[in-house]
Image 1 (spheres, helix red, strand yellow):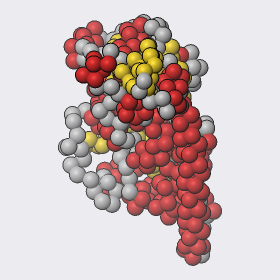
Image 2 (tube, rainbow, N blue to C red):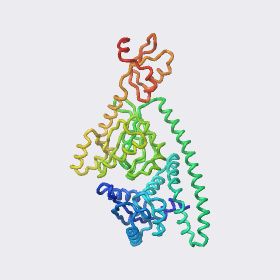
Image 3 (tube, rainbow, N blue to C red):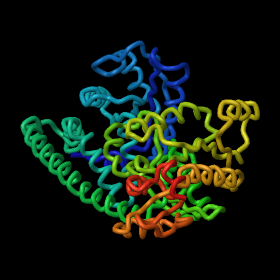
Image 4 (tube, one colour):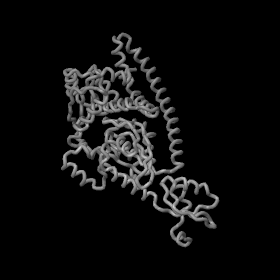
Amino acid sequence: MITAEEIQRKVTRALLVGVQLPTMKPHEGEALLGELKELVENLDIKVVETVLVRLREPVPHFLLGKGKTAEIIERARAVGADCIVIDEDLTPAQQRNWEQASKICVIDRREVILDIFADRAQTREAILQVGLARMEYSLPRLRRAWTHLSRQRGGNTGARGQGETQLEADRRIVTDRIARFRRELREVQQHRAIQRQKRMRIPIPTAAIVGYTNAGKSTLLNCLTRAGVLSEDKLFATLDPTTRQLTLPDGQTVLLSDTVGFIRRLPHTLVDAFKATLEEVVVADFLIHVIDITNPDLEEHAKTTLRVLEEIGASGKRTITVFNKIDLRGDPDRLHAVHLHHPDAVYLSAHTGEGIDELLHRISEIMHEMTRPVELLIPHSRHDVLGRLHAAGGVHRQEMRDDGVFVVGRFPPGLTGLIRPFVVAADTAGARS
């Protein structure tokens, strides 16, 4: 079976095809095509030409009409492209039809993103997650892979019988790999869960930095905590979550987690595969949503992030909206419009540090709101609870009483379940004070 790595080594020049459907917003197809160009260039493939097709409705055989398909194939040959990249999800049959008609590699947006993720994966967890997503993507496309293999070996003599035998073998190999990836990924997820439980024993409030890819999330984490996380001006520079401790100017402590960036039309297979990584977002006490203020599609990027958050069950959390890269001064009128639409957002530059103090102030405010003073009466038999409260560092006052230890303090959200049975009602507290 030909691998994505083998395709990448051979492909050097690509013709990109974008699609504008009647259901899409004006210029949306053009914007997505521009994003696809950046994605393909991240694979070190030269984009020799881009074509935007206005399509009334998808056609089953090629997605596009036969005439337009033939025109694009002829154009790809004329400009010397050795790959056609289509900015839609192709079915296995459509992808196979394109390759049979063009005799060159044809891939879709999903495969481009999968290849970028595979190129960026560093840790065992990310490698397993990407590997699982790619195997699941490849399984229904094995006949297409055999077509590549047949062309490489040359000749058609006996190819049908050999191909059918090889197809069955390839299917078993891929199925076995999927099972192995899932098994190993479960082990990694269990290890991550143990690490998270250890962190929660000393329950420090947590915040997850989320946002569109290349919005500057890793740069912001580095600016706040000096984390030393890889930060590059390219899509999906980091895939693995990084958690660092941040001590605020008022002495409060919070754990910040950097997460994988989102993108429009992020394949569901990747969302599913990365749910273990994205659990850091789900369990966070609040979110920091980073948006690139220089990007003309920033509103759509923000909506994409919110959609993915909803999909993974992390919507509705308290969120600080941050517009990053204000040092790259753009159109003043446009920046003014952003301020009008988002008056409560924080505007900063993670690169220069401008506006960081305002973000730290906002984080402190949320921390104070989350840790409002509470009065507790801990029974003498539950000194283990009292010990955990002191370990959290939130005890302001305590006094011994006949029926237990009376405690006043501020405690992180992670202790809510622990302290709930011991909270003293307001009228009872007043009577006992």
